[in-house]
Amino acid sequence: MSFTGGITPTAMFPLLGTHRPRLQPRACPSFLESGLAALLMLGTADAATLTVQTNQVPSEWVVQHQGRTVLRYTFTPGQYKPYVKELRTVEGRDLLRDAPSDHLHHHGLMYAIRLNQINFWEEVPGSGVQKAVETISSPPVTGEGGLPQVSLVQTLHWLAPEDAFLPDTLGKALLIEHRTLTVTVDEPRREVALHWRSAFEVGRSTREVTWGGANYFGLGARFHADLDATAQHLTGNGPLDLSGNRQDVSRHPWAAVVWNAAGASATFAMLGHPRNHGGAPWFFSMKTPFAYLSATERLDQEPRTLAAGERFTLEYLVIAVATPSTVESMQARYQRWAP
Image (cartoon, rainbow, N blue to C red; front, side, top):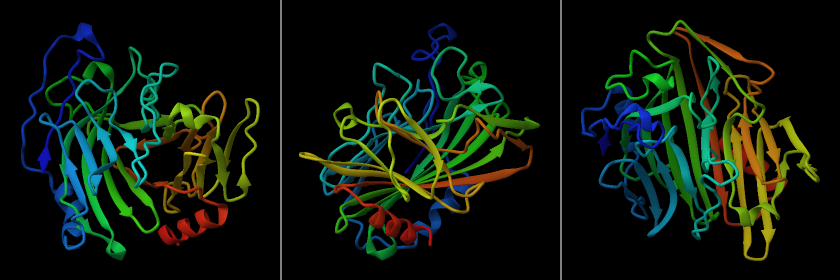
């Protein structure tokens, strides 16, 4: 399944006109084909429990396990950025919150930074746009360990706002991102896992780009309001003290938010791959006035400059578990993924 996507201006910049780019299937670039070829060779014998749905105008990727939605990824025309709108446990409990009234630009699980002083995190006039220009979804396959798995590969152009609605944005992209999302369901462990891989390269007409941002910029997650009060933040060093208005920015291989209350037992965790640029990520953790977790690259302290021709990749494993995890169980999970 392949499709292309554009962004219409009416939702974000009403004064820029009403041109709506056409959405038409077309041949996929070689990187899309190669990115999925290995997965397609794994077979489909045990993958029947997973299904993938898209809407009539391809702008959502919905993964279901045994008829229940486990992930919803949206790139609707008019958005500033694609993001994971829903990440659910195998029992169907959604952990993510989209566009709360206090921060409308908080979208479930999203990746954003500041690029050449253009803010891609917030969503106000002058903010940058991550435009989805190519998307392909693989059929479900049987992955490692015999677990059902499915992937989506997407090309994004990171654009200044004045360039977001041009018919051809390749020559205007500050940054080109090749994003691969792979969902694996491990029912015996009651786990839904999302492998998020982003490969970046400087745009063809750009000499260099400088990455920066606040201490929480990166891959960030906002949770449902009813989960805020009982959220406990966990790292390999144990629980974090986030009482009062305390925030924490510290470096760990992984970080988690655990809920262990009646009717709300679950774990949300982010694991950073050791081969990422700079090694283990820095995690921003907050509980008040709402729970938040972000895998950051400490760009507020060490901005990064990427020159033309340079590339790098970020990989994270994001998991939703239907039980509260411990430090020991999270350490073991990390070793299974990145020994």
